[in-house]
Image 1 (cartoon, rainbow, N blue to C red):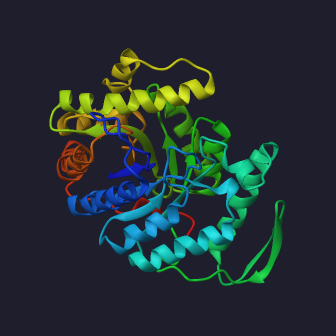
Image 2 (tube, one colour):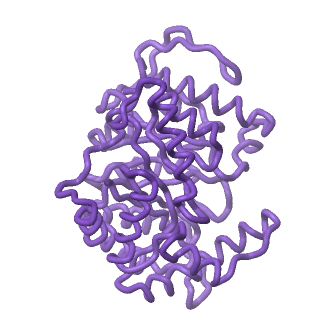
Length: 359
């Protein structure tokens, strides 16, 4: 199993002083975090995409390109690219360029995102939510299959009649995962297309997603894909520290702040410590604790979901000190990853599961 990190590059307020870290410093911290992840043996680093004042990730491909120039081994991906609000031609060009900078380490996770600000920002109608994604996914897959000559027509964009989309990536076809939430149709679509599946689990119990993941695997099998061509990953919040108590103490303030704001915005009550403790507990969605605690939970969740190829821990935290983030990254790569491999009976890192998709 690959172990990774996802980062939404949220604004950070110093817990002790209440001072917000400025954007230049925050981006500098992000790039240092990716470098530490690379040195620590973390397999993959993802950067999200949001168009909101509390995040600095509105241009994720720029951040990934900067990270590519400063790292050697770690794979670099979106988490997720909001495909509905992007142009597939430009998106492929940007990731092909990142692939060249990184010498073949670029990936994409494409999805619809959990916020809707991008739609009015780019002149799109929310009423077209489903058709935008379907059409743009179809075009992006067509580009991946044969970027030298793309013929495509559909809604929301002028047709392509044999044009080339350049540059050519190092990998030939950029590995691409389909990011999904809780819609059965999305799971079936990923299986029918034979695309690796990345499931965002931000609440509840991960094992409740097993029926949907089984649906994905069944759809893929019916479409002629082998189990090896249908890897499953999950994206979930978490934080690693030297002890369980230290991890909880570091993670809770930022978690309460971020989800409290989102809750007020969406009209439900702010979550409290009881909800956090349930999510951080043995069956909850958050991977918070010491290396042993987190590794044991990863292995258990993988078993509950029928086997995972990748887990990316979403470590965004609005009140986490930078040194605590760096320590968490070191522990994730240096302690959690080998412990998971031992628990699951693996002696070497898993091969890149996305290399067997539609390329």
